[in-house]
Amino acid sequence: MQKLRLRYTKRGRLRFTSHRDIARTFERALRRAGVPMAYSQGFSPHPKVSWVGAAPTGVASEAEYVEVSVVERVDPAALKAALDEALPPGIDVVDIVQANGGNLTERIDASEWRIELDGVEPERLAEAVSAFLAATSVEVERLTKDGKKIVDVRPAVVSALVEPRSSDAGHDGAGLSQPCGILMTVVRQVTPTVRPDDVLNALRVVADLVPPVPARATRMAQGRLDDEGRLVDPLQQDRES
Image 1: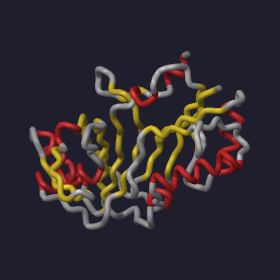
Image 2 (image 1 turned 120 degrees about the vertical axis):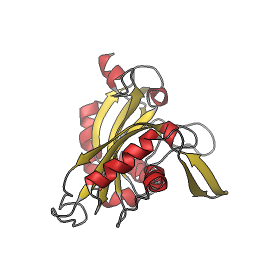
Image 3 (image 1 turned 90 degrees about the vertical axis):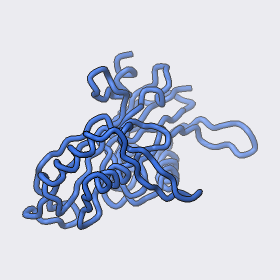
């Protein structure tokens, strides 16, 4: 049996798709591509597909991960081509490596997020970020299926900086002349999970920052933090092996 680790994207309108639907779409693509999947035992066998985290519904991602097990050896490059042919636009397989031991989940403890705030001046965003970083605790209220929960956002945020840039015309029709503050932040994967909307709510708490239109969040990378606070590619160890 061979285990393969894949990095894929969730772009465009598919950011509004739930993880459950993404998983179903992926498994259908594996069947269409003729991948010799390994199956679990029991009365209801299912393909051995292991998902490593999942971006929240409503956000895009350039770095989602999944492991698949096959019963026959598969060439990663051929599998990538076959899956890209079978998957819908927005889900693109960008990397496939053969697993060489270890636990992929243990190689991921943080995410880097890019959050675009149309209509927000970069200077105003920078002031809010400075106030947030200066705080030791910033609690926000989150509505869950079990009711309201208080989450302290500040300990999970490793870094946050503002990238001043005009909004891209290709994103939902935003004009190039419109101000757009872009927040780049690295957030630890803690329990409870701190999501991009939690970070935005924290900026509202500390600086009364409320974007005039919904923000757009994209997960740019996942990995383990090194001693300098940078993310290490979780597939790097497999490539080196």
